[in-house]
Image (spheres, rainbow, N blue to C red):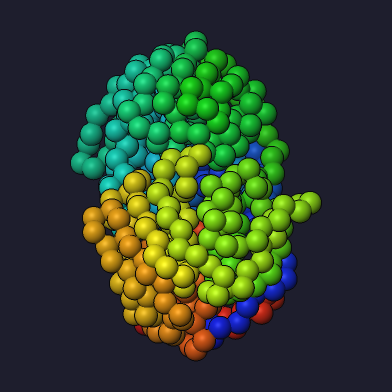
Length: 421
């Protein structure tokens, strides 16, 4: 197991580059299953999840060249239209192959993803939508088996704004016969990005980014060459790290419109934010100027659940009290005990955490439990004026490209080492 060793207490200064968006790259890689041409994707982040998705596509028979930021995929022949448990258990986003496989090949066998550390995330909306489009669905020893000679367009009312469900059904509908309408669709920027890619491939999709998406099915899609948008969660993490340490950092390629809820809360907390050409700059005096600020997570365009843990790390040092309400996932406060080991004062009651700011955090050895909790602990460690170790950083590597190599030029004393856990 690897760990990050951090000697904190140093303000971050300088410029940091945002990588391509993980949550856009994964469904876009799956979209290559919809065509027999060679798809070229640029600005792909170098992440464990990208490697896992590429491995899954290769398992199915796709040809691939994976050298981030460039990835080339050709799924001309899919000999095994299935996603085995061994790969799906590593990454829930593997379920995104379901829609494309049924749409183009008429058959898919995909392992149920089950729950995960931050809570259960069922795929019932995916299956409900595919059934509405004419697919037959059955469960077979922990696998979903979906079949259809050709999907047919339908009006699908989603019971919740599921991101992967919206993406799966949008890809499936792109090759369905007739018109599909997704009502109650998720609105995240990554869904708009997937729609852009599909439309470049010849799909006819409008309304992505709203809660009603219209898809007019086509008979065939062609190859695409596309550069993926910057990662809004990585951008927000760097902004929060700079604010927490009392730094001055320009986050290059941060798209303000994608992180407006976070920017609004950072301003409310006392940080200075400036939109500059090509990114966002943040300045802060750290704990001396930060104020307790309440947040409540919500689907986009609300405050993102993927930024909740990192924002809480900043609030542990803010003056006064803040209330953090997690409305999306039922078990996303597992970073709280680890923050407590560093001296943070956080009380959790159900989905509500009350954070009372302290003057400073202390270095400690802490354990990462999931991707965003990892980033939270890194931010906390960067503020503590002594040594911390963040263990199990394989979680971090799922969503952040060499974070230590990006933070070190900003003045952070951070290095990767071997550790237990």
